[in-house]
Amino acid sequence: MKRKIIITSDGSTTIHLPSWNESYHSTHGAIQEAYHVFIEHGYKATEKDDFSILEIGFGTGLNAFITLLETAKDQRKVDYVGIEAYPVREDELLALNYVSELDTRNMSHKFEEMHLTPWNKPQQVTGNFSLTKRQMFFHNLQDVETYDLIYFDAFGARVQPELWTEEIFELMFKALKPEGKIVTYAAKGSVRRAMQTVGFQIERLPGPPGKREMLRGTKK
Image (tube, rainbow, N blue to C red; front, side):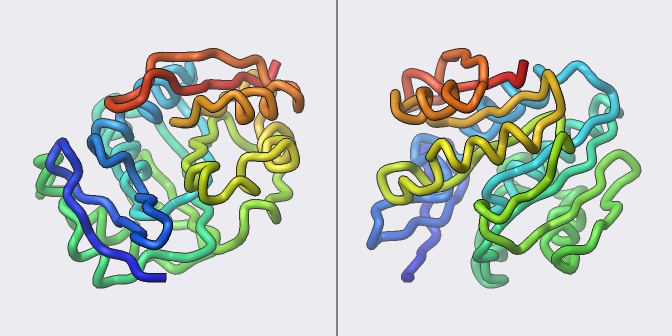
């Protein structure tokens, strides 16, 4: 499938799939969306100093990188697992401008290291951040009560509705520890109902730029 690098409204890049008219991040601002959805309403809402995160859709590594940056600020420890069926190509990674847009050139080697580490092998990227990238399909997840937080960042339900079903959210529910949370940019009624059906207590939260709402679920 053809892919190209585009600039989003906040100046940060993302990967766009023209045949689907779908992008890896919001065209209203890739970095803004990532911070709003996953850091502000996920990472900062987790009240632990040492916790685990599962990302559904590792993609460009933006969510993982900004999480690493947060751990450098607050000295919390995170064990991060990112699942991706189709890894981003090296030439695409070189065209992404997250390091410069975040003004973190001193951490550029860490962004590169995250992408260069072998798949399916844990890597201690910093003293506070460990990363395991798992190349697999989301529906093959079998983890049980393993994670405190899930970043659910799959392609939208418009193009991949099979990733937003009760079956998928049942796997997410099982993978979370009690009181664990799942955050996603999505707010469709069908997505909310699927999450509620499998047991999540749902909150509707203000969305990132370009979206009115987003969802956060808690495993009660």
